[in-house]
Every structure is written in C-alpha cells, then in structure tokens.
Image (cartoon, rainbow, N blue to C red; front, side, top):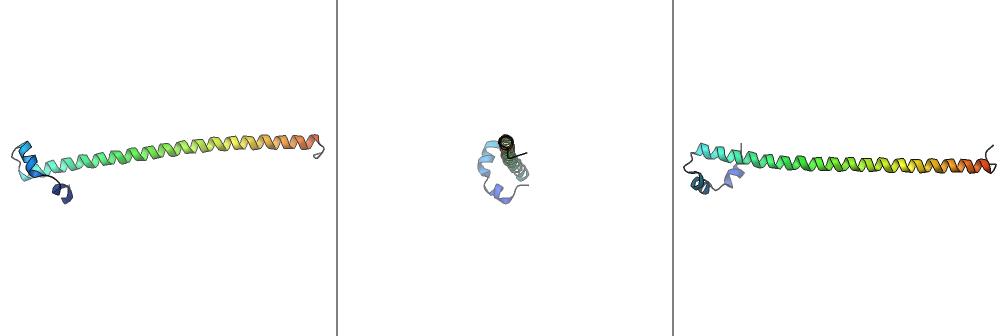
Amino acid sequence: MAGPDVKANVDRESIVRKFGDMTPDEFDYLVERVAERVHAKINIEEIAENAAKTALNLVYQEVGKSVLRKVAWAVGVGLLGLLTWLGFNGHIK
C-alpha cells in the first residue's frame, strides 16, 4: 500500500483528464501500481549495486591470492638460494 507521501505527489486532475472518470478506488489502485513499480526499480538498482560490489570484492580476493603466491614463490627461491650459497661456502655442514 502506498504511503501518503506517494499520493500527495500525484496530480489527480491530470490523471483524470488522461484516463477519464475514475472512482477513488480506481485512482488508489493506479497509485498503488505506480508505487510498486517505483519500489521494484529501486530494488533492482540496489541488487545490481550489491552484485557489482560482490564481483569487485571477488576480483580483489583473486588479485590478493595471486600476489601472495608470487611473494611466497620469491621467498622460497630466495631461501633456497641462500641455503645453497651457505652450503657451498662451508657455513652449513
């Protein structure tokens, strides 16, 4: 059911001129339908915005995982190189 704010913003005279003689019930039904469509559009926009945020978060997560893998690989290669160097120079027996 539309609140009084929706009905207050509707120009009944212009609607009656366009659609002919309306009963108050028909007018209220028309206002309710318009309010439902506006509300549905708002919900669709909110859903789309949330989906975009979720997709962006997933991209950030994947980028973060990729960076961490590369850092771990570099640390492993560095550690292996250090151990090899220490072994060839007699620091590790």
